[in-house]
Length: 306
Length: 281
Image (tube, rainbow over all chains, first blue to last red; front, side, top):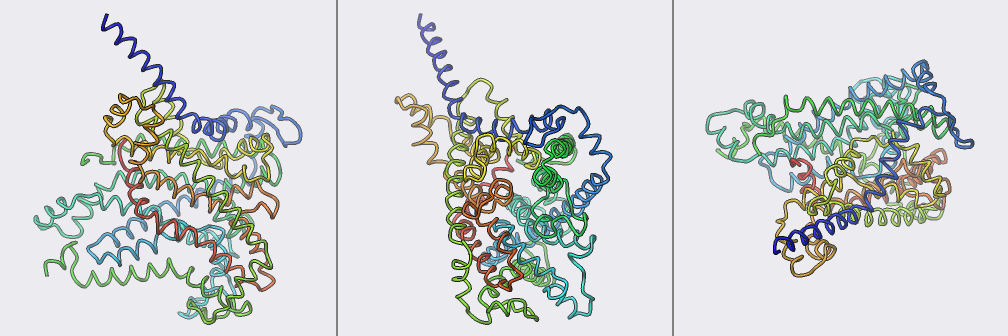
């Protein structure tokens, strides 16, 4: 009898927990379904197989958008440009972010530490369209700040925004300045989480800087490294703001990325179906890379010490 | 002497590292110095070479022209209204969902959590077209709703709050529930106040994300009166030719103020919160 009542109570509790659980997640779940979940399904399984210009209803065209995508020379340009950005930016963000974190996480006075951290992190929090105004002038060929200093030390003016290759470099420099703070801050936290006792013990054993870094810090930083790599890869594959604001994809098409192509096709040419095929390919690339990363993480990411 | 070798470096390398770090910090700060000091110069001196990184004059009038020549005040007001709305509701939605995922057992919880979490991995560019169609269907084009509603879902924020709330002992909920409080009371009066650091992180991220949102307004807004600061600055920079760079830079400098304030108040929490992303789930 008693267990019957208790069982009923537990059932009642279960029911109430289910209901309150759903109520608590309802706002997040609804906005997720409407603005992320639904859209990704629509992008990958519907719109990319349609011809759709907004004015008339979408028409199913099978694989035509993808056939066009794979035959259009512009597609290889935007994919190649995006891969170039990924190949340049991912190592730069990871290596520079890590080096700066090592530079800050030393036994130095805390105001100095605070100053370094703020200086490096601050560009991350400011408006991208505001700072590109500044950098566009820094990169200017005739009266830009960078060329002025290059001339001072006897180097000829660099056509930063006028040549395709240099434009890529200019966008990369800006991207590191603007964004390296986020990988930096992850590494700072990773370094701070390494127990002091580990370092002390190694030093007593006579470890030098080289050993401390490669045998202790780096292995213990692999979870941070994994996190940083995952987020940076996703961000680099969808790079938009930087090339859009600094070079507008130019000169010519030399900095036009997949994201810029999606924007051009969708919101300038109103070819929503064709744009969606790029969106689907971008999603497939990011998904593949995420899956590969997660399946390889056991090989090199070290979760032991926690 | 022992202190010198604390991080395994000798004196000479230490000095080199310090010099490099100071040069690096200058690299990060110099664009800001140039913008601030140029915003205080006469417009005709904007592009003088050699470049001056410290103020050479104090033309406060540039800041005045910003408000008389351009609709700069509405830009700021719009940005504030949108950023506050996004911050408050995004934080509310994320903390509610984070609470349920951390502390209530309900059917399908893990599946739903993984589904929402997968949103972190989805590139924004892959979903912008259907998002645009949703906004258009709801008749929200060229309204502030268009740059508020799609940004209320913040999977990373839900994850952060959940991670934080998992660390609070379950006995807090149990005790209150036995005393007759309902779940919402427990959430609002007990767990939420204990989770302030994670709420602060989510709010800071939400505010900065919204204040700096460029892509949303680019797609959704067309009219001057509706524009927020990032888009407004982009439009202003189109007026470069008129030689008013120092005025435009005054606008740039103003756009730095809220992120500076938010960073100053929130940086302690930002560091704590970012730590949470490193925890195993």
